[in-house]
Image (cartoon, helix red, strand yellow):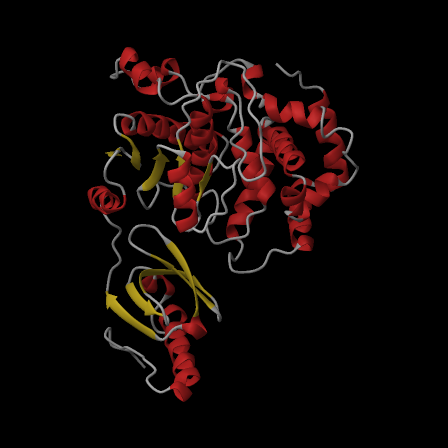
Amino acid sequence: MSFAATTILRFLVPDRRQIVRRLAAAILSILVTGEVTCAESKSRLIEVKDEFQTYAGKIIAKDSERCFLMDKFGVLTTHHISRLTSFRIVGDSFHRVSPSEFRKQLLTEFQSGYDIHLSTHYVVVGKKGRAKAYATLLEEIYRQVDSFYSIRGFKTADPEFTMVAIVFNTVDEFKEYCGRDQMLWSEDLRGYYSLKSNRVVLYDSPTKLNVGTELSMDGKTSAALRSKNAITADELALESPTTDQATLATMLNSVVGETADTIVHETTHQVGYNIGIHSRIGETPTWVIEGLATVLEAPGIRVRGSSDAADKINTDRLNWFNTEYESRRQPGDLARMVAGDEVFRNQALDAYSSAWAFTYFMTENPARARSYVRYLRGLGERDPLQHYTAEERLKDFQSAFGDVSKIEMDFLRSIDRLENP
């Protein structure tokens, strides 16, 4: 049995709605798992409709209830198959848009007051005169994050889509965008990475902090670092010998303090999801995602060849772990963090400091790092559409690292020996 590319299913009579939806689901199932192979379906351009909107893209995953569609800009949408009212194949091959087409699309969203700059991996929207500086910083973070994973044995891939970063001029513009993007805004929110749109979004703070100034931290985003964590012109010059250092310094002068800190953390998330470390549709445990991001906040981790051990420590996280969290810490906290994400909602600062401390413990020792890489590979091989239960999380963790109680004792002894710079 075969279906022409122009096959369209619609319901015209209300009492036939369920029949047509079941038929649409059957066709979609055949497309992905039947005569048309999964690989073929992921290369075809598909159009689906629900009662409200039309979507076009490639199918990246499906089960009996849901279909995940990726459009040509890298935007991910989830569809309940029973709610589809129309389906058709509109092309034999799926093509992502070019960076120039991406720029053209963004020009319709952002006009007066903004520049749009294209770089190797990014299209950046920023205040006039600053977009290039943001792009320079983003590309350096990308290089450093990719290097961190590669050196430790992670298999990385080039991003399929051009990544987007939007840096608003004011908090009011950022707040308005959050509303349109269905992101819960709060006064503490400085920026975020969206799994749906694959964009980093934040606003530029005019505040320029002195080195060592402490920033407040929140549970929405952990982009609360020290300003020393921002990448300097000296560091960039090491990797950009053709760029004049004075030019780099001028470019980066407007990307400091909280803005640079937020870019570092949220871009670390974005890069991880785009080079194959995390799945945008899977249930990767929060401690893994935030642990890696907070480890990479430290400049000594990001900058290749850094010999200063103190620069590899995230001082804010270590401070919190050894002071504020110490009085509340209980045996079994590691198992609770591994088994579920509740602690990140209920005790965010404790959770972020614990995720950093344990990830640092695992990645800075070569033998443990090899086990950690195998553990992450196992996470990547899971069916992303299957719920990841607490029991399964603990089982996978202990299969990779051994008894969680023993690991917790070794981990706490190791962190106790760290000296806070």
